[in-house]
Amino acid sequence: MEQQRLDLELISELRAMDPDGSMMVKELLSVFELDTRQRIDQLRGELGLGDSEALRRSTHSIKGSSANVGAAMMSSIAKEMEDHSREQSLAGLPVLLDRLVSEFERALGELRTAYGLD
Image (cartoon, rainbow, N blue to C red; front, top):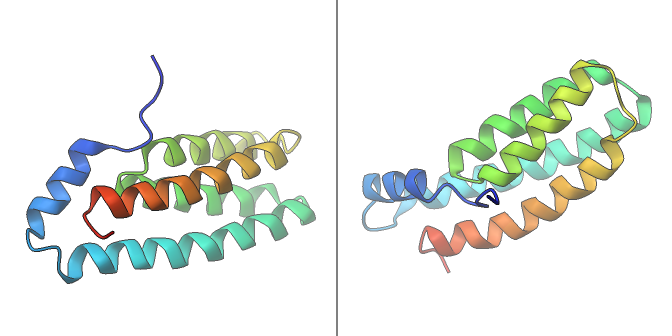
């Protein structure tokens, strides 16, 4: 069974807390987008330095923030990166980072639609 890109149950719960689609959801996604873009830049630098502990912390943060907005597949990719970093295995991380970035861009558009912000 293929993993769902978005956690639709969580998104429904968050939308219910902000029924008119006003500030809460817009702010949540705005902070998520800005923070994630910054962390992706950090990840690139940390990967270049081979800093597995910094990579672990950054991917842990992305894992949590993506889960909090309902980007389930992105959270899963970040967890996989975190696991590699914890094991100090950097070999597969460039490919995983590319997957994370691609998934972030796809998920961001789908999240905007799911939250009714398009």
